[in-house]
Length: 231
Image (cartoon, rainbow, N blue to C red; front, side):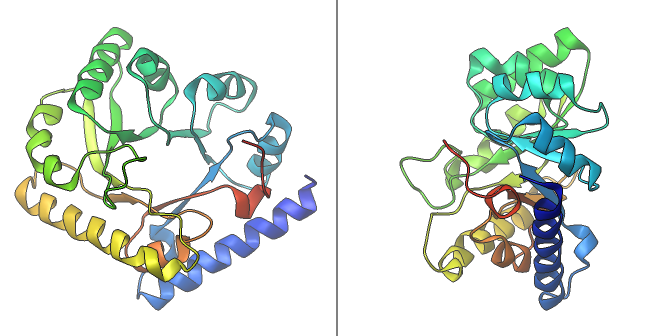
């Protein structure tokens, strides 16, 4: 991919985010674009960095760490994929924000490595809001009960929720999922007001405008920026 194409794609995505935010009466600055770089080579990520992007998302920490070592240190890496417990240490080493904490057991393992590495880790709780069997995440009815145990992991800091909506032809069909996540976040913030609930990570290339209209603060976009990628 050349810089001109990437610059055009980035401009269009930012304009779409801004229009969606304005339709919802929101400030576009409330929405962070996380550029998803799964299978994207280092040289293209560097082009995106040169265009001003600083937040990059990776699905697999073992693929992201080699990239991170070659790229500027002020990049904010977001771990957005399922984290196997055996790779929890890598996730702690990499993540500026880990979007996909989906069990108490994973949280406890992350806590252990945070202690080993003497660092705190901002996290989001992944919720399988659509109930799809193929997706990871807490079931909606499990989230409130899991929070005290996760909050007890003192090096982890809950900052909100994440979900992946079903793959649908019409983005409007994803709206109920995004709305439900926002409503859950608001209810949890009332129940646990001492925790951080500023973030909703929801929306990808096919549905991010609807997600922004429903309150997304982090949108995870790959294809609209980098084009279709293998894998």
